[in-house]
Amino acid sequence: MKKIVVLIGVLCLTLHSIAQAPYSSAFGGRIEINPGTSYIGFTYKHFTDANKSFEIIALSDFKDGLEFYGLLQYNGIIPDFPPKLRWVVGGGANLGTWSGFNDNIVFGLTGMLGVEYSFDEVPLNLGLDWKPVLDLVTNNTNNRFWPSKFGISIRYTINKGTSGKKHK
Image (cartoon, rainbow, N blue to C red; front, side):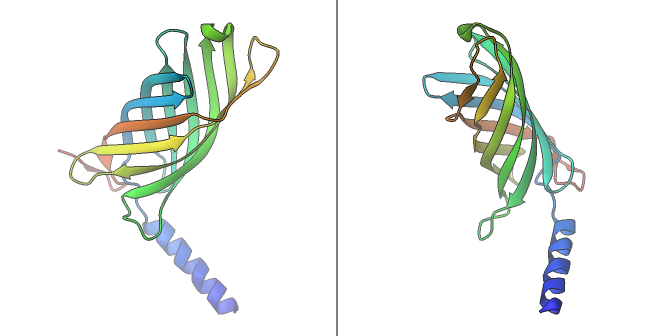
């Protein structure tokens, strides 16, 4: 039994060390939908190693406010699917201002769960995710929870993989 556990451990470490991120960095646009409201903005994602990344998102409804998100993420290959399709899970913080809610400053916690697909033929990455938000600091007396935020990101990949191979 000990030999099987050791073999599985060595195999996992080997696979982790040879895995590559689908790209080094990517930037693009994002559309996010919350019941009754849509937000449009920008996204930038950067891999720090094969399975870890951070993402910065800026969103606005172009009427009531602007909000920024900083997320740390874990990324992995989905078994029995092409390796270009990966899962993403993570969390971080949000900071913004929304005049529609009479908030000068909003600060809170954000989670993310989703999938993304990177194309080999073109330097493009598509993401689909669920991003619940809990605003902890607002001008209002109550905290706000936004459980129904869903987003689509379309990003241009700057570098392919962690090997440094660049697109022409």
